[in-house]
Image (tube, rainbow, N blue to C red; front, side, top):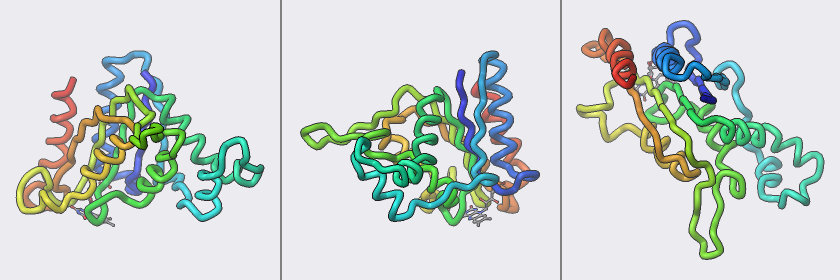
Length: 201
Ligand SMILES: Cc1cc2nc3c(=O)[nH]c(=O)nc-3n(C[C@H](O)[C@H](O)[C@H](O)COP(=O)(O)O)c2cc1C
């Protein structure tokens, strides 16, 4: 099994999402002795945001790209190759301001590429070009989003679901570390997520 493990939380020591995804990797290893893990730590190596030159290079036909344009898209090309090379993807992230930390959004901006990860048929139908991947998405949040008054406020999981579907990935399992700040749920948030992971195996 080739696993790409995307880590987002900048809290390298105390992160709930990192603790949960570490358990998930441990469990995957018990089932797949051949597991090869590639870690993409976006907190320690953040990606640059797209600029006008890079976007111009994306939309230049591959055969016509000059050296500077090839250099500008090199990051994106490597990230797309890395995504195609895995069969399982873990996205381990906090929720920030109801949605994705911008480093994770930057990853989506680099891998969502016309002609590489999605394309259009001659009839104009969009097709995702990334298929056959299993995704586990672990999201830690201070409040509880699985139920209760904040359910509608969650912009994280809907975005991930649709953005992955856009490039052809539909097998997505969400695991919440829900309520890490909420006084009522704080004590049980991580243990509950770890139990959920254990029950998957
Ligand atoms: C900048 C920032 C924004 C946050 N926004 C939200 C939010 O909108 N909703 C929420 O429930 N928790 C929010 N939190 C709390 C985190 O989601 C929570 O602390 C989570 O456990 C962090 O994940 P980690 O422990 O893996 O770092 C925010 C935290 C930070 C630092």
